Image (cartoon, rainbow, N blue to C red; front, top):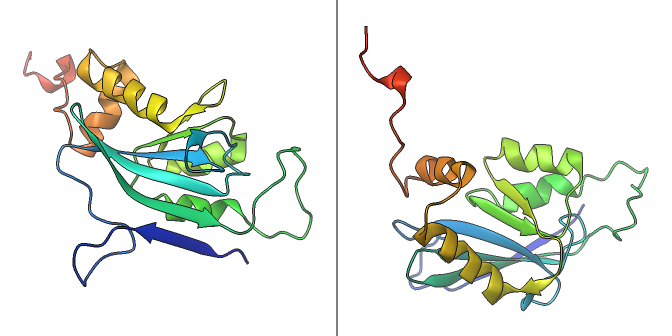
Length: 167
């Protein structure tokens, strides 16, 4: 059984397992080994840096750390210890997940938790990822991001013809 450690800033004595999301913010998780760079596959990430991102700013919400990670070789252990479910559960409430790679079964679990995984081809700094996210929010977001924003309550859903009364 793997253990999960959370580090978050607490401004009062009562807090939930994951701090409340800033109004109008997109919650973003970044797979990292060093808390400075997006430089990990989903399964091998020792940590996830979780940020609330708006068009104007971003704020570190928490760092989630894991003891039991894969070795990025693509081989699975036969003992049946599920290392994916605890990660997905720890990231519940995030809207986007940035990582270098994610396997099909892991991606399916992440998507079923309403987290949109984004594979990035090369390592980059966390700041670059956050700036890119802000740029997507400021400009016309792609359709998949508009859907994520609408579901997160950050942007209004665009009306479609099925919603109109054209009978």
